[in-house]
Image (cartoon, rainbow, N blue to C red):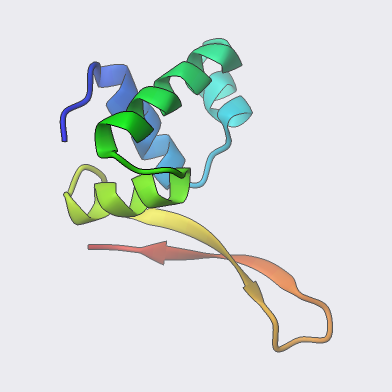
Length: 88
C-alpha cells in the first residue's frame, strides 16, 4: 500500500480519527475539493470502496495507530450515536 504523497497519509490519519472532508479541509487549510481528490486516491491505492474500509485496512497495515468508528447503541429507546476506538 503506497500513497502518492505525505499529504494523503496525513489525510488517511484524519479519516481514521473520524473527520469528514470539510473538517479535514479546515484542519489542513486546504480546499474541500482537494481533500476529495486525495480521498479518491487513497481509496484507489488501498483498493477499497469506503472511508471506513480504508481506515480499517490502514490500521491492519499499521499505517495509522487507531481509528474511531461511529456506532449506534440500540438498547436505549432512542438510538444514541457514539464512537468506538479500534487499535491494532
